[in-house]
Length: 71
Image 1 (cartoon, rainbow, N blue to C red):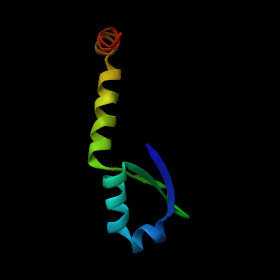
Image 2: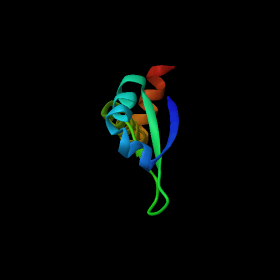
Image 3: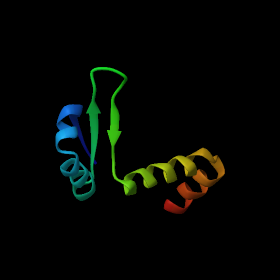
Image 4: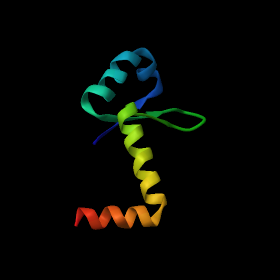
């Protein structure tokens, strides 16, 4: 997974290009802002994968069963 930090103004000017980059190149883009905190732009596929992993790891029995099957 690639990580890229970009200023908010650059993302605003080229939003479509950054959205394409996120989807086409599996980039995760950190959008930096002067105030009110930074944000992250990622593809829906990356987000879904992250949420699935968090869910699996939240239940220790499921997580241990998965680890056993991998081994």
